[in-house]
Length: 222
Picture 1 (cartoon, rainbow, N blue to C red):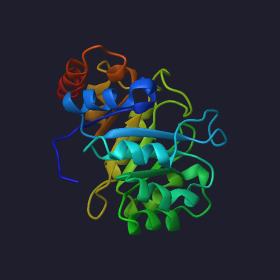
Picture 2: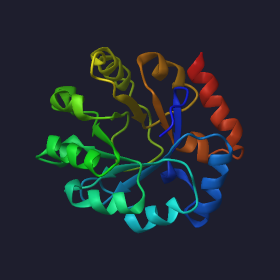
Picture 3: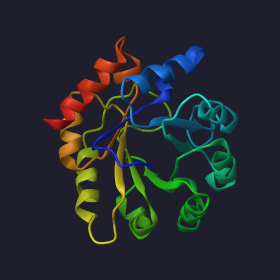
């Protein structure tokens, strides 16, 4: 994917109107979004059920935005091929969901996607320390996963700072944050080291998505 100025803005499809997905996606693409964040939930790893590869494949046909797929599923290793074939650009898996994280991240990269790893708020960052050399992205959950519209957990800022401090040399992963992101905390998140801001209701919950994206960018720049 072509490099863009940071932070990248990734509207979360979980907050969109599912009855008008094509229109909703076209709206945020025209508004200047960089990625489209797609939450994939299986009702087992998290207490909710959303969408899978067939929908992602359909979305790939209607947008040029990179599809940033966040797998909140049990046995994510079973889904690498399906999401590659569906057109995913980024595939992020949870450290808590697999016993063979290093092998899985290598499989994602070998499949031609960017490999991401995510950690829940209560999971220590030490759980992913050994795989940082093989990831393209680390997703810090700033809410407990499973539902949109939750309140931001402030402790995520320190976790982002620690990851940013760990970068250097061969470690060039991007830091993404998801959960309760809006204009009130975008500046603090960027200062802490976040490169990709996932925002749901802060974008899809607004009538004017162009203004919403602009507000996030401006807040992150302050």
